[in-house]
Length: 85
Length: 253
Image (cartoon, rainbow over the protein chains, first blue to last red):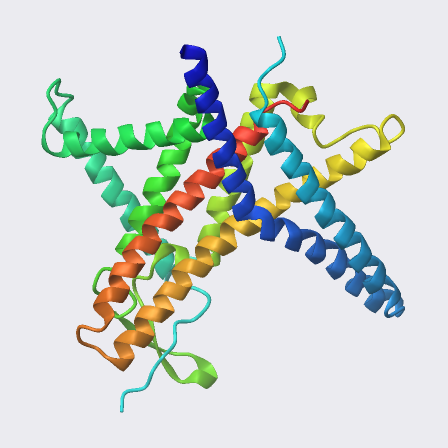
């Protein structure tokens, strides 16, 4: 019974973490775009090489955004799993 | 017809102490702290009663309810006890600030000042604390720093630092994932500060527009909405801080 209630508690915690992730998902996608996209724009301005670095920044931001979402989803899934004995 | 003056995006300086500009959102935050301090002093003066009544009863319901809710999110009572003081302080500070911003006189009582091209502008003496992105960013900084401090203290330098910094020669994919983790820490600050600022500022503008269009009765439902939004935003900020604290103190598998 006690084990069961502990499992329910863990399951609830997993659900809340998933909500937290969902609330933050948009910003997780936006941040790499700001970093790499903005970096690309600045580099292009500095080196006068438009549109090479904007394009490279765009590709990098897409990869990074996908990567962040994947890593965070994995974290949530791992958190909910029971510990191995 | 009266002229509609939209609230400015940045908070306005009301007076200066030397070089330091005291802004209207700063004054409100000091008021908020005073309110919280007075409640704490009242509770302290009344002493702890075994059979609670009045303010103690209310506070026990509030604190007990928050603890149960946070424990449900964390899923580990020992961790909840460690995070509880910080997260509850954030929750109470944000909710009291948000609700204080709805009181009469906030945004409406001020001094007329000459502002260059704009001419005479009303500078409100009091303004909702989190209608200023500096305040939300400061709170976000506290929250994200707390995540790092708790992460290091509970997992150790190697355990927590190992989430971000992995030798690229040994594990190139892991190294890239670590960089992504580091970047997501930055996204936390952006999400915290802009979510709260956006909601509070939008509420302030909404109330001002409705009051300007129909001054009587019509703004009442919107005030109700803002009371709800103030509560939800405080809860979301505290909840997200708790989730990030939990994730920061969970070892990587």
